[in-house]
Image (cartoon, rainbow, N blue to C red; front, side):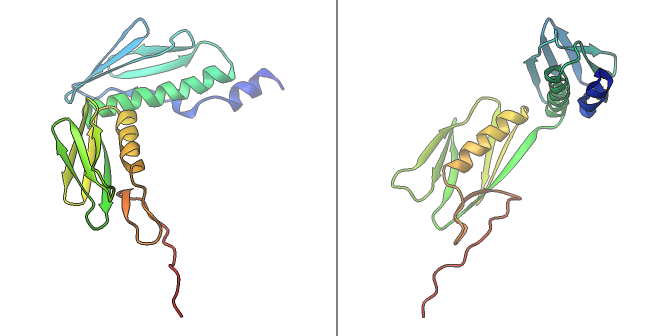
Length: 188
């Protein structure tokens, strides 16, 4: 294989596009740490700048790979997605909505803890991580925060406490998740 084919084959479509910086958002790069400040808060993340160069202009961020190998091209697109998510998060918080279904199943926020009654003999308690907000209204739970990874991870941990079962659909599921129902045993 020639090097032009390899370079064209493994170039990142996401990494090639410049990332727009909206009004009211400040982006700075100190050594390997990228800091994004916006109206909702501040996020920082470490990047390997020896593999992918990050250039910040007045209203755009461009990323260029330093080397020409498969790992660097993979990091190129990944870094672009991370930076885009950071900019979106400090301007508009990320949300995950969960639905709690089942008789007697409920959840409430007590201080820094999420307390859920899920049909077990004792209530399930989970500590809410810093930077994440949980709001519970009847059978709906909204988890929001600046960092998309932390919001998604906490929502997945909450859902894992009582996954929805396929017969009656009892448990915790995502708002837009569809549970395939099974037919129960038939009596003759």
